[in-house]
Length: 66
Image (cartoon, rainbow, N blue to C red; front, side, top):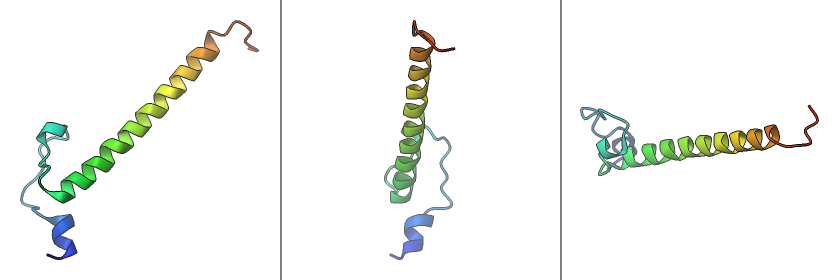
């Protein structure tokens, strides 16, 4: 097995959906990509939640400087 098979295996097969239950996890290249993809989406989502939370805390503070 060479490295091209790992990253380009099964080009004839395609992923029909990005939903986790539609991903063929038996293929290592799909697993690596989607773990990184959902990890990045999770980090972005957590950052947005932190920003929203801090904005709401500053908005409802009694002694705001604005």
